[in-house]
Length: 117
Image (cartoon, rainbow, N blue to C red; front, side, top):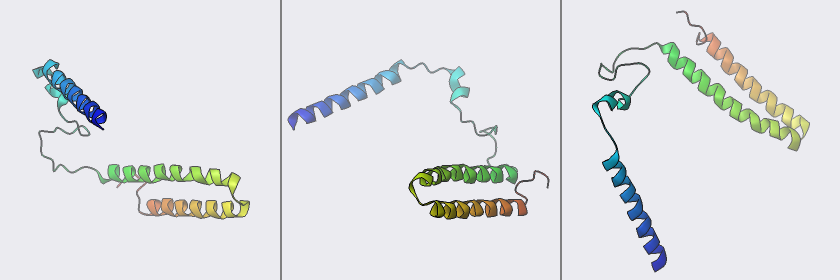
């Protein structure tokens, strides 16, 4: 127990020493100020944060996330093809694809897929 405590204290001391050395030895200059400033989608961080942006960018992002998750859900269905009865696999696959098609139809119906107003 004492050996573990001693090793833990040595590790903490060594990591703290490395952090202090990196702070002391790092070169900060005025030219690095632009590199360290936050960059958010081309907006100037010094200007007002209440600038309106196009809702289409937000909707396209949401659509991308939904279909990106959908790809992650399709992989187990492919694995089930080898392990489960074909009829069960077919029902599961068709049910999943119908849900996706209904989602695409809803997005199309709400004009989320068009760029014109």
